[in-house]
Length: 454
Ligand code: HEM
Image 1 (cartoon, protein in one colour):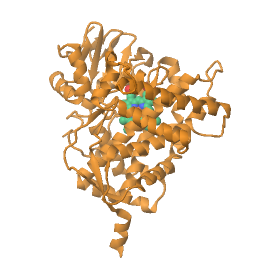
Image 2 (cartoon, rainbow, N blue to C red):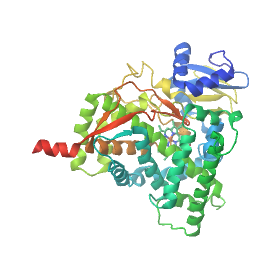
Image 3 (cartoon, helix red, strand yellow):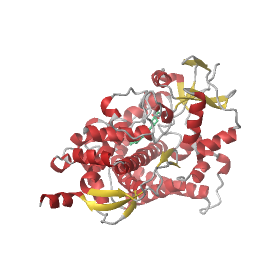
Image 4 (cartoon, rainbow, N blue to C red):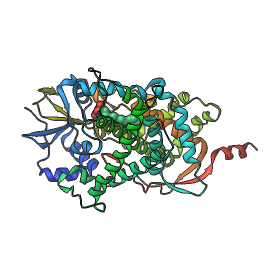
């Protein structure tokens, strides 16, 4: 076996750096070791991080059976063993085939009006002079959207309870300190509802109860005409004609609820930050998104070039999931001249790939134009990963981002409360803008336009 170099520091120190300051740590390692480096136990379970596009391509295009999922224990703690983010092989492929269609094509576009309506409903609560936490408000929008897609409902008692519980559940693991409870099993002490781990376990039970009640009721009165994902999962049968178990259903639902709302909310908050941090980006976007005053077709909005470039550049500069899911080798593999034994874990380090000078000149700058002048290959630009484990919500998340941004920009004038550089924080298993990133509702665009006409 021939592994790339890596730092010779104790494992515990490595883990702490990965939890507390992952991006700074990766910047240092990238500067020192270049295209690839190794962390973890070099003799027993090495973890190799690649940021070179050629290596990423080889990982994404390798025969899927060469890998098994190496999702860390905290992902399983959050979403359960049967989640498609954890499963492997034929079962994993079957779960993907079942869950992909609602997030693509016509089925996805049918959510266009809903996304716009939900954004309008949330904005209706805004008044001029109000200050709000950008990430929390975006989370409200994306949670409502995903609950509708998954359960086909966006009102009612169970929905409201679920919405609140999921919010609190995420809060219990949101900060760096709390997230360490998920990463370091030895810290998981259940000392009752007031202890962080006890609180997490308690909330998870409450959410499970609601999910199992919903599953039970829907099973009793299955309406095959419904298009929501729970109905689809309830009707699915495996090769032996068996339906999914309640636990399997629960794990998939929770996976979609988690993966599907927090990530998109963070991406939206970051896009809003840059749009309002750089006046020239805002004015270009406003003239482009004015189209939605006269055109109601969501698909047209999703095709606006500058808006698309702003969303792409947001996820380039801030890949919310800063690395691909780890893949563990089941067979030997050679990548870029390195030979890896079975058991080696390979990771595409999106954050460093997106910061490569040779691909993205002045990589720390927000420049949407780079996506208007060049097309990037899937192994050069990979905010949604790639290969057989790529994000199933990729098209949906981008569609949602564009519609929400266009709707907000067409309706309100917003201003950043603090015009200062942004520092991301760890939020469960992703990176997010801090809740202290706030905006002021400074005016209404519609009325300003009317006034200027008068
Ligand atoms: C801006 C928003 C999002 C970002 C940046 C994002 C990013 C990612 C990334 C990087 C992966 C790992 C891919 C890999 O290892 O190759 C992933 C996996 C996944 N994502 Fe997303 N995602 C987003 C939104 C969504 C949405 C809206 C959904 C669902 C509705 C979703 C569902 C999933 C699922 C189920 C997986 C696991 C796929 C598998 O292991 O087969 N994501 N996502």
